[in-house]
Length: 590
Image (cartoon, rainbow, N blue to C red; front, side):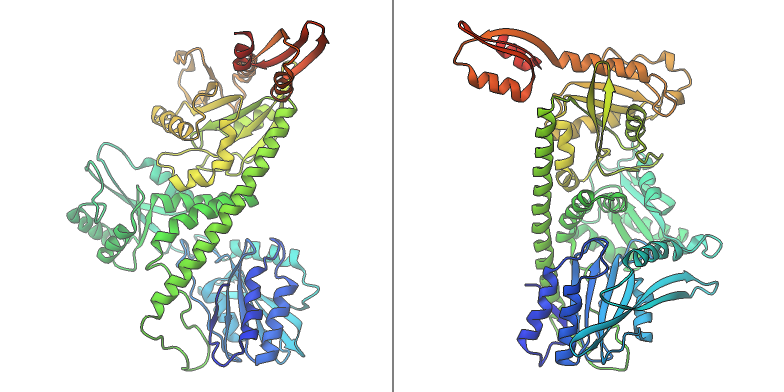
């Protein structure tokens, strides 16, 4: 059972256990809070006369439960966020004894300081939740003050949840100051850093732009491998310190994944005011913002959890005192930080286990869906390729759908599938997440359930941005990931996209297994459909064969994996006519 934090001295164990049950609840994604949580908080407050508080993530997971004295409760300091211009992604629901549902000035200040999604206070009377008031950030005034909108009080059985969520969504936009109100110097300014003087940091800059940073400089050190202690050489690291001062930068983004010890060592040299972000953390942050489905969010959170677990020291600043009123309870005993770190590690490991269990369920569902498609005898065509190569645009063009397609890295993250007619038949077209150089290993593992669509596809369409100067390197990266997924032996058609960006596309010679198109302009789409039809025909063949009378197992396999046109049981055996894979045909006719 997870721990209830705060001042629990003198409180009956049975009351604490009732609060601990809150960790076992998980409100639905569009549910502001559950009736079980309201009831548990109210029961505790009525029994003890103390406030109780719960922090809930947008996913519905309970982050922490805290108790305190009446009129004062310890508020946790959230982990440092990537951008101070975003809401925290947490909402706080807490109780007020005596039936008072109105937010106090301390509550409102905490809402502003932590940039919570929402702050809600529940009046408790006779052991029951009565009314609840909700505060949501409004906008930043000309003098840089954040205003707050107050809604309610509402009956806890009749909270207008759709309205509240719409306000939270709007607040996330409102609190981001327009450029006219915020100078460039106040926005996160980053210096990009990498090794190997032969390469550029162009792709890292694209990632930084996608994540919302302003890139003000670059440092590349010619080295065969990163320094084990500081990533850069010690002298070059101090050059970086000077660049940070000269360019007024507050963030350093590294082009490789840093070890926990490298992060600690670099932080000591650069100072605590400088944010240190490695390539993996940057990609995970982008993925976190792109995931929109439950499956996508699970996969991203799994990768983030695996990344964070060995790097928690120094990043975990839970439960700093932010209470109103003077003095009281602020002093921590020696060693308390280490204890809290271990508690948080245990919670994170538990969450990791939960996520892996959920991902296994996703994999099982996909296997069921895949089996259903195989029984329907519909071929599967999977789009694979480097991020921003144009896969989603091609999906829209071939299927007539309207999947989000933008000229940015990882514009779409969640997998999409569409039915497409071709020739006299049809196929299922599946879009997969885009690949990128140095794609985090944990991210590949987390998305394996999705990426395995490529492994089981009848045909892969490897979409390549022909206008990219690094297309050969990008193709190599895609092939490496396909090898990891054991999908590199699948029939593949290379689709060179964005031919309209070439000065003279007629000069390009791709080979027999390639098609030149522009998914955006519709150029070459008919030729692509013809090539897909031919490739799918090549992967399956029609056979007529007389099998021995005792070949029931083979007949069953043909029904399961192929398309049986006719099956006659004769005196001399079983005569069957079917369309099967080339491999099956070779096995039967060989």
